Length: 88
Image (cartoon, rainbow, N blue to C red):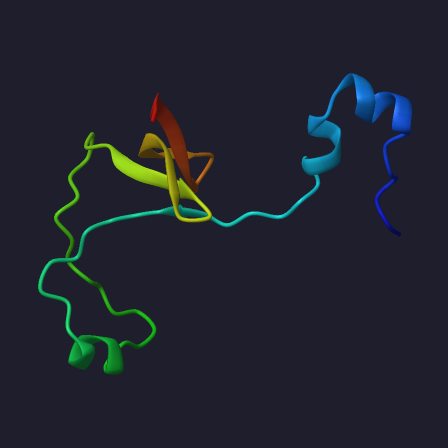
């Protein structure tokens, strides 16, 4: 079932209604120093990769490659979540 299209009157009142349904790519970046192509080739299920990230350290959050905020990881009901700490 396709998403309902907003009515023209509603779009005129709130132009965000037109773009809100558009998909975007959200990425969280964690530095992995010294990671090489050889490491990439040898990736396999269950492998642990060391990072320089430490608990409490903010990580960049990007939308379509553009930095929009800083965030931190936390566990919420057995799931990894990201809490926004500062808008860019």
